[in-house]
Length: 599
Image (cartoon, rainbow, N blue to C red; front, side, top):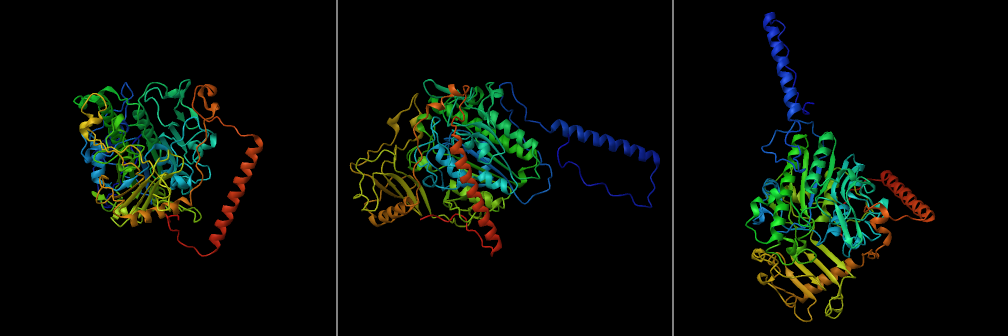
């Protein structure tokens, strides 16, 4: 099969007065036939060039760039969102890392680097906020992550990003890590807006066997094809390679004249630290074994993203595509990640836990090769991508994200002036926190963090607070002697930083600017009034994979009466929504402002 778009315009007709010698005409016809045959043969042979598997399941590196087949452009762009797992802020070449990431460096240099970009400190919260455009306090997922044994998932009454994109004609596909709950079938990715799903449901697992043990005697297989366990892929292929191959297959079979949304949530570089042997070649000088393994995993991920980009070009998607790259949270130093020179790590509300590597790469950007220092948060992708897709957001849906495309593409000011990093009312309380320390406005024992313009306020127990410089990885094991350690002052439960002037959080200004502290505490209080109850149920013994054919998967079954009541409630809600939309259409049309903050 010839590549799409290879056929050129028809040759111009011969002038009516022209006369051509019949022998010459015959020769020209033969040559033309040979030329067409050669073109078709070359096209057929080169169509899958560079996409073959190696014996171990790896993808052979593709060198050079083929011109993209000419495809009739469509107004809706192809949307490619790539989410890395646990990549540290320093762990990319253009942030000074010793780990080689040539693909990420090139894509970022040719696009827009996001250097004031925030996510959440752990997996589930970042993913839930990306897919709903809402803060954790508005989905009930403000505490910890969704555990494999919990009867919990992203609330079913939240319209997800893929659902909104399907409304305007997008084909939606997810490859990789879900981690938004699966205890009932309605929670699965294919029931939340994705046409297809290939990946894992849990937060981590073995990269080769795809098994995960949550505790002793609670182990199971965790690889899915849509709604069923993908036993056919239980053949020891490294997940980064396997997911990339699936992305290539999706692109090869999709018509580039129809818009596609691809959510690629790689498992890498989350623990366990595993990588194919050939990726260690450049890192034998790294003595710390965790850092060396982490570096190999990141190099493999970088190569995978190169292959995804080349597939976009090969199959005619690239010229009308928007590629967004993001980490889901900061790195974990004990597992090889580095956030230097930022403070803290994954799982904390210090900058090292929430300030992420991120960039946008696209031929559709107006200002390419630039750095965006405006405030951007992971909730912003929801309204931004829906707007780019020419979709609509219902007026009664209150989002926490903003449409930031003009900020990124044209360099305009961000509509965002604040970020609620989180309010977690059930996290371990700070022993010395009190209402008095919060000026009667806020109980500072509660873990919370907020950013308003240049200011950042933290209360309660913000988590591990060391600065971990590169030399900390110079020994065989984790060595905290090289860390810049800080002992939190007795009675301390409030911190204030000017992040613009002090991005490394070295100078606490809470005593110097009590007026600013009070203002930010009031803003926290306003946000808290809009919070929904925390969803964090105890584990359910029925979740054990032993009771489900050795597979992690949906286990919860409602009684028929409850199912009927839930169905009737959903139908009533849908009818009410349809009636409201009809009334809106009958009246005058008003523009919908995306990202109106609450409170």
